[in-house]
Image 1 (cartoon, rainbow, N blue to C red):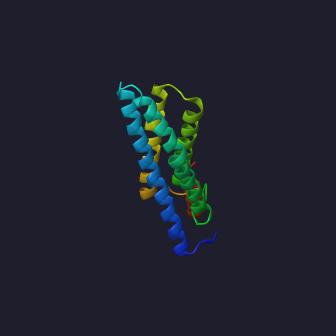
Image 2 (cartoon, rainbow, N blue to C red):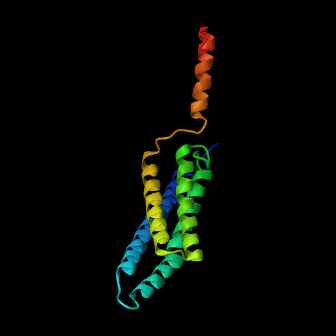
Image 3 (cartoon, helix red, strand yellow):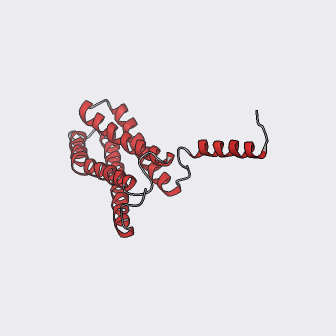
Length: 165
């Protein structure tokens, strides 16, 4: 598959993706700190006010950033050589992006107890942080790479007349 983006277009799209992703991580960290403050205070209406602030941040900042990161990530995959499911590291990043979105929707809809919110918050921070690290290292190859290496090795053994049975 040939690239469908020019180098400049790809760089702009990649820049948007990085910005969406890193700002999303920062916003999630901010809401996590607010959540800690809300659960640690006994000062009257403060916990309720903080929860309302978290809800506003979720709806106006975090959700658009999550959607922006997801859409730009999909576009980068589809419009470049990477593909959506061609590399293991991309599949893991897709899961690490979708899981926090699903957890965020769950928390907004179900309104679970504080312990569950703690877990979902920590999981979201861990997922987004891991996605950033994976983006830098990209150590895993293509999905079919190991299978293909095995076939080439077997073919070479047949050509050499060596049997590995």
